[in-house]
Amino acid sequence: MKRVLATVLGAGLLLAGCGQNTPTATASPGAPVASYGDGLDHSWTASTAEGQRLYAALAQGLKAQDFNIGLSVTATSGWGPIELNTSNGETPAGDGKPITLNGKVYSTGLGLHANSEIHIHATNLETPACTRFQADVGLDDEVGDKGSVVFQVFADGVKLFDSGVMTGASATQHIDVGIGNKSDLRFVVTDAGDNDYYDHADWAGASLSCVAPISSGTVVAWGFNGYGQTTVPAGLTHVTAIAAGQYHNLVVTTDGTVRGWGDNTDGQLDIPADLTGVQAVSAGFDHSLALKNDGTVVAWGDNTFGQLNIPAGLAAVKAIAAGSVHNVALKTDGTVVGWGLNGQGDLNIPEGLTGVKAIAAGDFHTLALKGDGTVIGWGYDAFGAVTIPEGLINVTAISANGYHSLALKADGTVVAWGSNRFGESSVPNGLTNVVAISAGSDFSLALKMDGTVVGWGLNDSAGELNIPTDLTGVKAIAAGSFHSLALR
Image 1: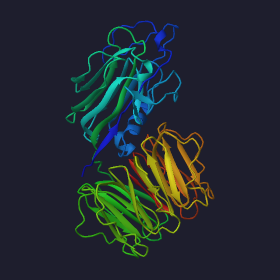
Image 2: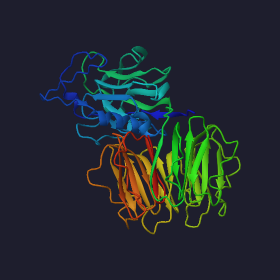
Image 3: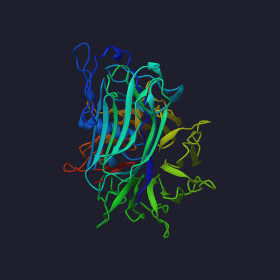
Image 4: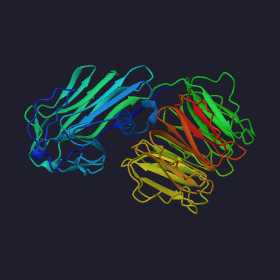
């Protein structure tokens, strides 16, 4: 079972002071040169963690950990760090401006400065296979008619695109090339062989379409086991996705079927016998959801509040989230649809909400992550679960459960808000390099880039935070009400 999704690589580049740079030698792909009139080198090279986080942030819809299995990502920029969804700006991080090409403003992108290269190398078959690259390219409007660059795209050493020399006066060029599942991709901007004055290059609104890997894994569980929810079925392997509900669990296997265990009081484990072609699952209190490869949704279990009443004609769905007794679905057009109980405004989706790339559902509240990295919330807010922290930006993933909410930022840090009765919103000091998050009822989990899991919040007799000491190599996490799952 595979799913085709899009990676957004858009970019806009601005550097107000770069016009004072001294001329540099011609840069060859993979060997950027930076020399500046102040005698200092302002070039930037991503660390391993920064490179992987950058690519994970660009991979909208794919799980961040899908890109950490045998994938090497390196990145360089001629002046300051590469910025996400803004221009490059000056030397500090986060100082970019809106991306603009010939009067058109782009909401997504990478801000970088010639000479620059983003190099993505897959080292095994369990990494995403990429098939197509599209982008608008040019010099950012902020340099006027100045600057001169060349955009190039390489796949396995073969040049797929060369823009020729572009200046600030050039028309925007559109790239649309087949990648052909190549394992080595390079996105290069050179200084056109003269100098790097005003070379503010834009990979604007770009998309790299990839197929998520099939990661055949096993499941580890811990926490409350009153309904057998942490007793993983013997011989369960080839798992690709996991979900934890109140007292039951669901998994998807490589053949596109669903298995479950734990509480079945309300039929939440009565998986339809003919259910196949599943790519994702989500578990509510006493009901279950499955998202099929054809973009349709299937539901079973308790229907007291209409949790199973999928809206007629619902299709083109790319993500699902089950709350306690309500559900939301994200469509490919970036809109959100909901059904079930609306007792606390859980389904009061803001009018006109579009551009959504991820969703999450708590007990009685809902979150939406927009393509610009901001978060919107609605529903029950007595504990502040939908009171989004002021200034929260650059978010790449969200999670909700109980009465609290989590956000993962592009820099690998976690932000939490809402109920903190048991410390569930008290993110451990110094927690970094996080690639995935999952909120439990009164506790929280984070998956780190090294494959280990960190937890905080309630840890009573149920053992919510009794993470196995030898647990490593984790690819995904799922927190239920009082128990948790890890896929490795």
